[in-house]
Length: 120
Image (cartoon, rainbow, N blue to C red; front, side, top):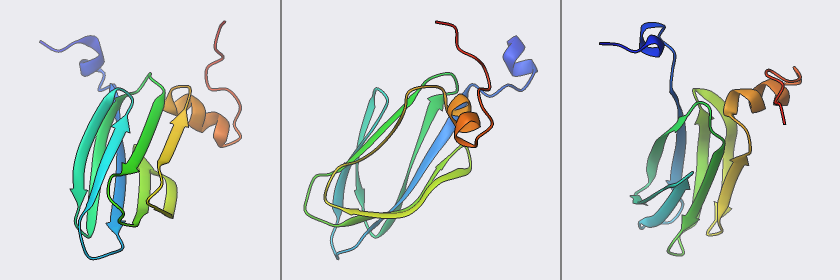
């Protein structure tokens, strides 16, 4: 049996995608923290990272290279929309954070004002 949200085809999560490239021959060991989940993986030459975040939650994303291999973010998308194109950050940490749900942030970032006015 489907819930009301499933019947209405309402998305419960949004997809984050990072495309990464290691600049040196070798394997970049990377840890990605997305909200409360941590994932460690190896970037061979070009690799990608996917995560699903609840549509009504803030997004906190942090990427750290564990060995001294320079890394480049080729593309960063949230729910299919480009957030940041190519960004080379070497071996430092890289992070992205918004303190409200993505679509509320996007609506305001696009200069359209508040989508939903929060009540304090």
